[in-house]
Amino acid sequence: QVQLVESGGGLVQAGGSLKVSCAASGHTFSSYGMGWFRRAPGKEREFVAAIRSSGTTYYADSVKGRFTISRDNAKNTVYLQMNTLKSEDTAVYFCAARLPTTAPPAYDYWGQGTQVTVSS
Image 1 (cartoon, rainbow, N blue to C red):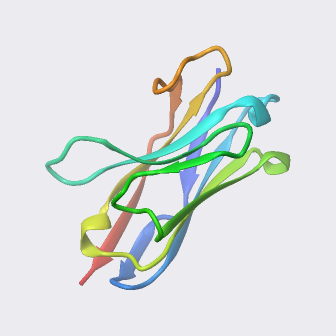
Image 2: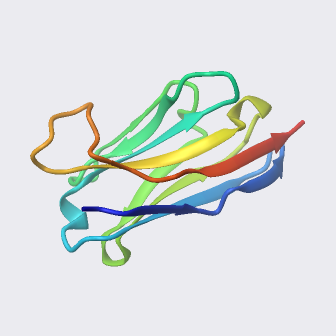
């Protein structure tokens, strides 16, 4: 069982920056694929960014060039640095973990989310 705990959400003005974190339990974090998703009010959950165990990263077109996903395997933590935030980035942000035995795009574990609100 892998537990994921997000932190770092909050209120930020449009054009500002915020960094959210996701701490994972488990001894094999370095082997997990990790992803960030978000769900805006009244909308479906959508993919934001992902990072493989190899370090390869993927981004949704809507955040490419503004958001950066990274991981620190020594701290069992994945980060999402969000720059040039827009009001449409307002959402609950979730992290997810994929075990090595699970094929993309599925994820095995999900955090409870952290609220990011961008004021215009």
